[in-house]
Image (cartoon, rainbow, N blue to C red; front, side, top):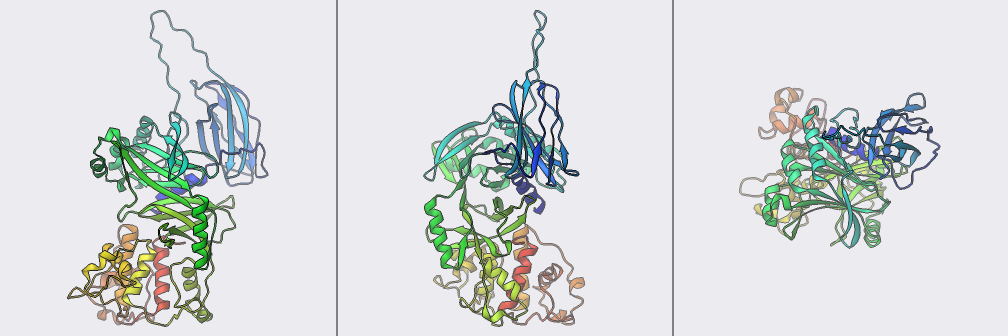
Length: 559
């Protein structure tokens, strides 16, 4: 899964913006491109201070005829290609670079002449190849670029905003999905991507044919949808196609899936800034809303919850963003609440920061910055880890100034931390199975979500014991289950081998041994000393925060 997310986010990062192609750049320069006749070689050469450049050639109608990532060697690059003999004549544009550092040149193509066939012969023409070229990023499956030359562009209203509708041609999408599924993907899911380069701040709706997606779902394919504002990686496996068709009362051929990538309006951003200020944080850039709707038979149904499956999205931020003090949050427009969303921040070669975040649902997302510190951690061994998670809004102090690192942590408190770290939505009804969880308690929603995700179990008599201090072996069990939830499965571990170094390993409960071994092998939990585990020892707030940080890094929930 790590490999898949890297591939998908790489695609977005490497698509230069189309809004304003620069003829010259301090980072990239492009030599003049000679005019050619259809069917001849086009020589593209230039200089760049980057490690690699994206080369894109556009037809007169702005559709893509050629697309590749080219390495830069000793400051120079070259990307020769042969233009199809069936290409139309006109002025073509070469765009080279990354992000805002681009250069462009135009050249003319003369259409090839067709020799009239002998009398009575049937004239057949070979159609031009689909635009684009498969990009091969390092270390993963080869994403397939979907032909967008036959797409229809229109406008619609999405949440009160005018949005550009990109209606994807079904045949082209089916061809790309078939090609992606048929190639050697090195064990990863097949990936296709559809790119639309619009204006800054433009809302975009991708209109996809339901029947094509349904036919490809068994391959486990992912459709990556990319705009200038963000990228949505849609695993087809998260959609229950039969249930969608039944709810709409329509046949597959009459249904479309609409994926919306919509930058939030000024009033929403103003409210987010206000909520952020209330928790000592600041908003970085504008918020963005991702949503999916199925439409057919005169009805629509929102598809915003995906069960245990994480769905990846990507945005790009300026290079001034400090990842150690930045986090992605979900904004609830009903309550104004801001909650943590798992995210990783990657510095790119052009100086920008690629932010990949994942969650099992859709909503409005924003990037916040915060710098949290606690006076009682100044010399504490857990200071760095606690303040990192506090700045990312994962853990809180007992007050604005105090963290109380040596206080014990309860079972309910640790369950709430795991739920927050995984980006899960609180679910108070889920806690109803525990007799000692009051519906109005602050932890009811967190324990309910933890029970629903199978992170926790109760004791005999149907109780959870929320106020009991959690033990180290109980914590190990919850963490092992959280790893399995985040990654889809947990790595196997030999309890006998992994725990052999602990003199007190016989004291670890039989119900916890496998989980303790997994947590120890992953480096999430270590012994109290070099040769003791102390399974029944009470855990402190500092210990819980450090284990939580190790778990989140191990599960790729943070950097």
